[in-house]
Length: 220
Image 1 (cartoon, one colour):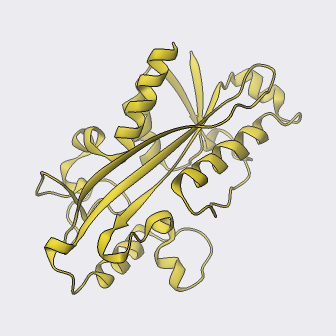
Image 2: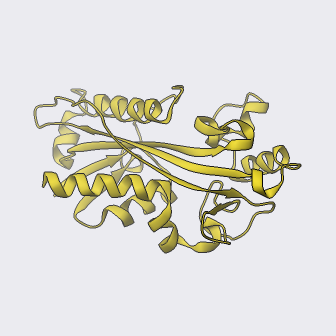
Image 3: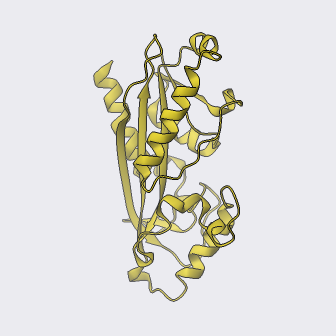
């Protein structure tokens, strides 16, 4: 069975990935590798951040001190993603800074809480009418192959986008991130209200993962 190491500890993201890729692919996460070093996501694009995460984690895996562990687990690929929300009225922000949007104001290290990010977004859009609150979620996946000899391949990219709008107040208890505020085109409820089954068919990550799943089907 093909085994992927997902470059995340986010259980919500992991659940989405596993649900969409299906049972034919075995997915491990960074929870299985607690010693994996953090990666600074300082690229100016989603693709740049995803490639950096996948590449650095792959290099860490093939380090001679960890080679035995990797061989035992049989990891064939490292999969990383970077995704975020682009709001037209904010010139595409928060974009690559989506996870640490609120922290940009304070200089605090690490990601902000979902609540803090949503609060900041609503504040910045307070005077923006509904017709100008257009936005999209965007996702880029980077897949890096590790062959049995430890050679690391160049990243392959798979992307997806989901257009919608930002509503005036949060709605729903499901999802994560900006899901309570984002209403996809063609719907009147937020991602947090629509539920995982609907979101996993519409979302930016679902579209990118659909392309990845098709790639594996062709390759296998």
